[in-house]
Length: 205
Image 1: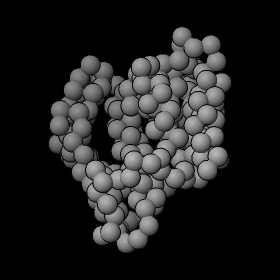
Image 2: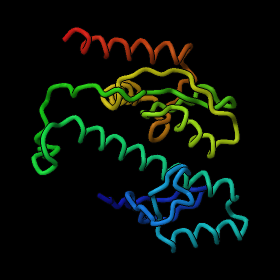
Image 3: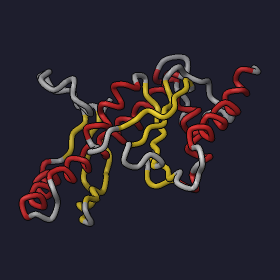
Image 4: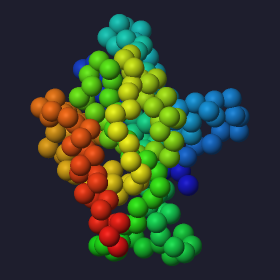
């Protein structure tokens, strides 16, 4: 089922406000089905406005591309989490409880990987995300980065573990799933320690 998102496109100090993005678009053709963010679309007028900024020299093509890929990747990751939540319930789709009626107990872990990555150029600006296939996700992230993306840490635990780590590091959040660990001696050790403490409660059940 498709879903629409209203997003501000912020790029190089310019804002294209209230752009409409759609997730779940499956075209008839398969020419780009293996490309990152396949199935996500953005309204044409917003694209034209972005291209106008590029043509005027106000925004570079690389900055425009990074902006589009950042938003599309964020949408896809959010929908990955929604899908994982769907799978955590039993029964038919029409029987799923509303989000406000979800049980207060910690959700069951899923087998997807939670990962921490950063670029070689800025190793302590770290993205904490979740993916079924880390290598594929890293290829997607690499497209929007001029510096090589490096996997710093990974552990199975899925959305519950990712959500726990995001909450634990919320005070150093840069934006979205990116966190500033520049004042931390060993970010991966700290992430791993918090992850293991969180996972221990499930192993004890």
